[in-house]
Image (cartoon, rainbow, N blue to C red; front, side, top):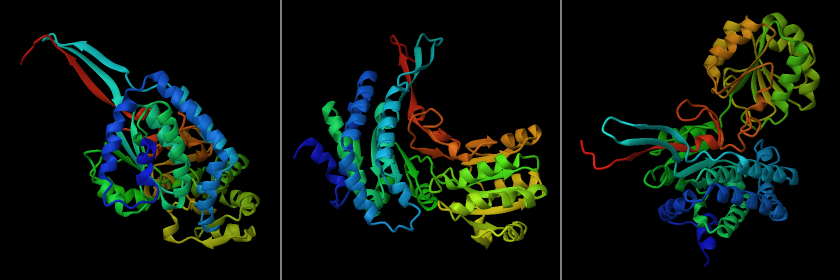
Length: 430
């Protein structure tokens, strides 16, 4: 069995009693990644991008096997689907990450203390990064590229929905690693069986950080059960508030875009908040754009009669559970409020602290919204759909962090490092 075949064994359907031997291999392989020069890691990713493009047929064939097993009505199917254009985008992202400045080895501080010791604080890789994700094969390449560029190894725990796609992508990654003399265990795909999740979350001796990317239930499970430091990413309950001073035509474009351009992603609109003063005029303006995509609207007691009178076709009365729900589908809650204070209170109550937006021409209202809303990304007069590492110029991302420690917002290359103090002496003792 070749090194690459041995590295892939844990991810191709076998059911080992334990994944600890695999995690040990990843930890050992991390040394080889850490020792890659800046030019080597850049060249590795450029080579990988070429291999991805050359393997389009292989990737699409594997992806189709996954698509065939998923119900067409499942909103996650769009996340799962790969196309020629999306594969080209993945290769483009690999090339973009390759060109980003390597975050490792930066000198953060240098001084000589009273005893004559010379101190340096430098950036170093995290080590082994574990990522748990659902039905998004693009995450496989995104995580691998970011980790390899920043000198880290990675453990990938993808969902069963994307198993064939993930296996195909990891096999291509392993080919690239072997071509550059790196142990392919540096990128390890674990079995999809849920029984291995608890073992992974307990493996703090071998994995340095774990990042869940997916549903709120997955994130909460990791938060409650992990012995490894965790960074939460993925869940987005995103609001857009249309202020009484808003340019309503612009607001309609923003709201429709935030909801329908790609509803299955975490930066899509989940709840529209409208000032009462403009609700009767504004809500009917959404009819054509929302009906085109058959968006099911859950309207509160004030919004419902307005939309009903406008003849909106896919209308239901909102229940309490619809507020604070991440729909990941062509569904949207609507709330009418008395003004900015009530809008801010609603967001404070239901936000997941991902992305929030205000549409307004009032500078004071905009400033207060941007200052008072506690979220990773806050917008004025723009769609929340822009919250993305690639769009922000960060290359690929592992996810959108909704917490405050270590990283917030797009979790990208710059955050895959930690710090190390290096002290040089000449025999000093204390």
